[in-house]
Image (tube, rainbow, N blue to C red):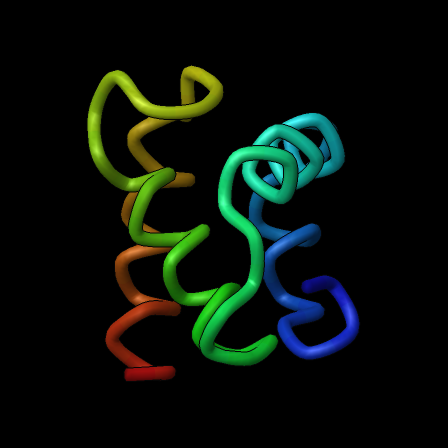
Length: 69
């Protein structure tokens, strides 16, 4: 995902690698890299899913999703 969505590691910082690996293990890619990146970001913005993100990280992820819809 980092290759097609390089902003995600920058937005998530140290939380990116672990969260991306957990997502990839549980959600095999079916609709392509870009859709997987969007689904990953959507799941991270849902409370209770993935790492505990700060308010600003969630806001930046929602903005990224809006810009890459």
